[in-house]
Image (cartoon, rainbow, N blue to C red; front, side, top):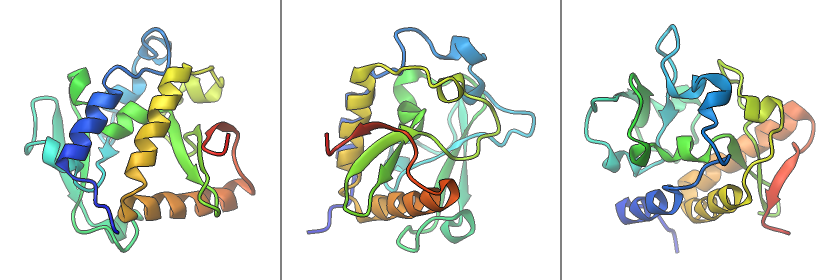
Length: 186
């Protein structure tokens, strides 16, 4: 049975991750909240997962939305057009942050046998995140919450395929598997 993640699932995931934070304090104090404010080109933002856009109405008072062609932005063929991209132009209400923001600096990595790993984000970023660069230890409850959220998201074949493709590409780029912070095999 194919499971598509829908609005009730996203409402659950937002509630699940509402209080999850990587550190005991505000990690934005380490870097001036570099990932939460516009850059000089106003190009910073995050992609929403399929169906997550239902939680965002048009443009908000803290964000604008762009509509991207999935094929032009490296998404798998099973993602429908358009892919929603949120760009923040003001601090967001914490409870409204997209899932990609809630998960950062963690990224999912799937082994070919289906084992889920959580790693530090390896995508090229236009800024430096001290949590990644200095390998700052993250709160265990944060990592466990993000892992549970990914286990739910990966039931959707669109999201699973994206993570699988990203994982294979990452393994080629890094010539192996990055440092593991959490594993479903543990």
